[in-house]
Length: 127
Image (cartoon, rainbow, N blue to C red; front, side):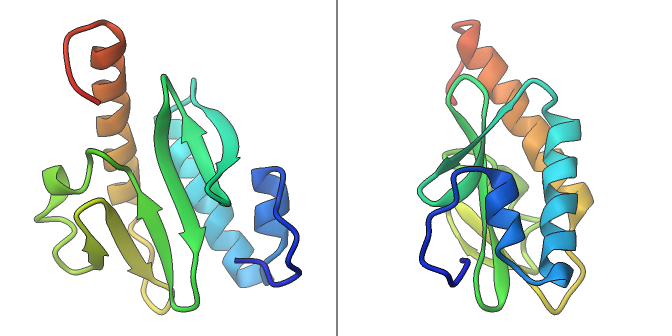
């Protein structure tokens, strides 16, 4: 998280609080999510960049050694095999900053979440 103790009001502010190399990664994650979910809206929730589409779609955040990616409540178990090389929890993935970020996997997870959200909005599925 940014170290100036002010909570960002936008994803732009959040990203601006980090060194350029981290900003580059965050901007690419943001662009990947935006491309996979063009109708999603941006917000800051839980002090993290968040994309919403009929509710929360995904969150991400910078930590000391990784980027946390949160597609909860679905998206992690469904991609368990692809996420096997990464630490995380049942509702998050941790992408180490010293390894390439798996942007294609992020895109696939976001696309999956969009499909789930659209089904739920249509009344035919869970989130």
